[in-house]
Figure 1 (spheres, rainbow, N blue to C red):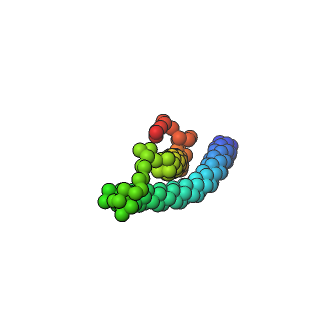
Figure 2 (figure 1 turned 180 degrees about the vertical axis):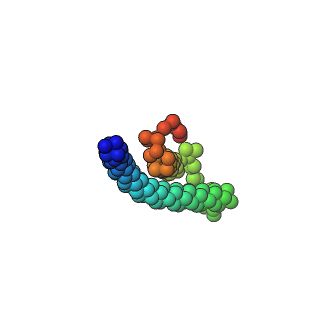
Figure 3 (figure 1 turned 135 degrees about the horizontal axis):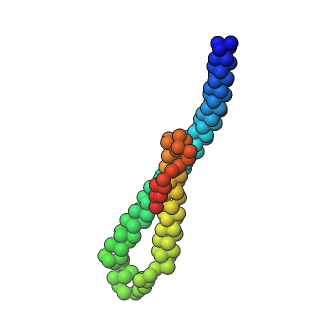
Length: 148
């Protein structure tokens, strides 16, 4: 009879361990699915970030080119053109050229938007990597690595 009781207790304990294992398996499958979803999001964000980096480089190149063109134009202006030499035409140059100011404002605004998006995307990537890499075992992201 003692053997039967021990056997019954062992069966109950084995059933509990099996139930715990099934629950753990369910949790790990869920975490794996979340990890895959986060990995996909990180890949998407990384590609967006790369595209924005390329656009930023292109805009920087365009800005550099515009600055070089402006420098060349100023050099030509300082050397003078034939119409300036005979004093028949006078050209007024605004200290605050509205067209140049508008162009500069547009480029600066676009650059600020791209930089802000870039920072936001990098922050999201870091957050996803932290949650995918180590946050799962601790019940979620802990301690705030507030980047700013």
